Image (cartoon, rainbow, N blue to C red; front, side):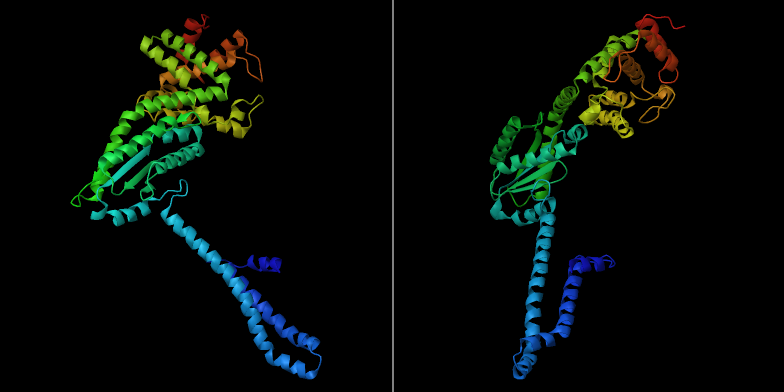
Length: 432
């Protein structure tokens, strides 16, 4: 029966949500009616011991049919209506709650503002909270960890609020709390307790950090929008103070996590930094500029944090899909480093360290002097270390082979002037 209905449904275009259920009910009811017409007389005849009883059954079989089909219809419609009720409840939940955190959403918050903005609830305090470094965490560790962080923050805020308070997710990484009958000093205590919780909480080596601001409405002469704006301004002031130090800590955490995922990467980055520093000195960079190159060597592969560990540590040849995955790391590294005001130059160099002098590199296909000079230096240092280091799938190349490869690719993969300076002044070998 169900298979038969499914075959019918396969040819029917559904235009509204419960059309399939309606067709099912109609078909079942029709089928029962047809079966009753064909078999009711035979059934009555089989059940009747004599003609009198047969005529009596025939008299009342219409009533029996109505009763039986009504019961069946009641059961089927009951199941459908239960489905409708559950759907309505779910839609209502979606209208007023945030699926990720389980908190109220902005729409519900705005309704609560209208309800609570009354004389009897004064003073009303508002707390605004913003999760620090969420974009960097999403870029480095993936949105799954970012979502877990938002859930943890939601739990922390909710745990420090009373039953009658309204805790809502305001936007992507922002939360808002309405505290009726709460003075400014009391709201400050709530903020302090949330900050204390932040100091104790971490998620996969990431310390939970929030910027918080608060304001209080003590008179009905002041609009609620102004109070919210004051709380938001206070939050952003705290965010400016906190963010630079936090981003530096996050970058350190990302680097540390990368080295734990792939211990070989730490030694590689150190060697690239040292070689880049020597190249910089050879072409006349100042001490400050060569120090920057050394740090850039440590940071150039930071984007590999977003690459699956199994790909980073794979001993055999990478598949085409895995190679494409690896090629994402300059872009990921750029997004991580560009999140801090201290490293915009580093970010651009990290993005460009796999570009080629002939324009056949990635991710942007830059050529020649379009590529930042620091990125050109890192590209050569990176390739030199790759050739002179032992890999799971091959031994380190001989010095003569390495020298040949650098000369051969000068003007193609490498900046020819930088390649020549490296061979002559760093390796101490003749160019011709």
